[in-house]
Image (tube, rainbow, N blue to C red):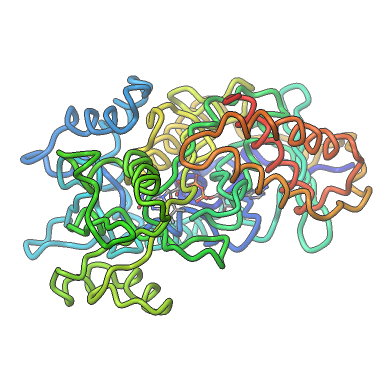
Length: 485
Ligand SMILES: Cc1cc2nc3c(=O)[nH]c(=O)nc-3n(C[C@H](O)[C@H](O)[C@H](O)COP(=O)(O)OP(=O)(O)OC[C@H]3O[C@@H](n4cnc5c(N)ncnc54)[C@H](O)[C@@H]3O)c2cc1C
């Protein structure tokens, strides 16, 4: 089989994949894969913004580190956290070079907002659609690079390593293409679709984590999963629309089923501004106390024009659902949101497999500890993908000679995937681990998840995107449940 040669394959076109491509040397031949259209990713959904110490008069690195440690339960990797906080402001400013526009104050400086868990205003944002602004600006910049080939709707369905080189199969339009490279960067995002309900986009099935696991890379703390307290309560859609933390940052109240504030009972000091895992747990306590799973977020007491202007996207999405947030509380409920664990990497994004790197939500840098502080994720995606690019620039010389290489590869054709396996795993995860793990349920269901994973591994199934997503969901669920039981 003939494999087309690239120096670097980047799997993912979210913030981490795009920013890595922009920081790699121009003499490297790069392939970027995106399994759906380029903007379908978690990065494009980011609302609140990106956190960084931009205003040194009012803020400093130690305060950002302290806030991150408090949110992370002091389980954070200190070295990587320092890298994140100290190098982050340069990367955020660097985004301006690629045309990213942040909201500005009257004096022209970047408008920094507050979010839960932050002791200072340090969140740079573009209205309430910061991620989309960053992703679309970076896509435009990457498309101008002549050394980067971007393949949309191109799903990585196999990754093997032989000697120093990686061999990959990519599914596109009912056909397969084959590529080889010296370095691979997984920038494949989170695992939200391992759950019935999540804020994550449809791509978040943990593919990179599954491939890395099967390539022998260390996976760390995959059970460090974040449940956001304020997803719009709409059980008809699997992808739950997020009502950003920034709404609480701007003063919104959390109300119980009786439309009464309750956070002071559990968090007398921080109240609604406690970190998101704490708020989600308080909601579960309040649910026990009231016996009802109804909750609301209320910012209707604030000036209506301010709310509409500050949260135009949230305002219109919620209005479509029949609620005017400038006039009434809106229904919310916790939902799977983010993965702190992932493919274990060092400070330069290197995994335990030589030549394999991981960045963004699929990677475990340890910066977040057990719970991510709001808006630190885009920052992590930027800082560590740039550091990966710098490492590859130092260590990887461009290919010389032939453009293709011969290599044996399994026949991608095979059995048809049975239906229902993905749904079964998702139900199991929803029952076994929602906000806090249910150890009894996890123990009960773990053998079934293991069985599904093994069936998928050994069943000789055709290498389709559906098969890879099923295998990835089952593998991630297996690792998570195995960690908690
Ligand atoms: C609703 C929402 C709001 C958020 N708000 C914020 C916020 O305000 N601030 C903040 O810091 N963070 C926020 N986050 C988190 C943050 O957006 C993500 O963690 C981060 O953007 C992830 O970036 P990424 O590059 O790692 O992955 P993603 O942006 O998810 O990109 C993953 C890419 O991998 C590709 N991919 C995956 N598998 C394959 C495969 N097999 N083959 C080919 N391609 C593949 C996908 O197609 C996609 O291009 C939010 C997340 C959500 C869901």
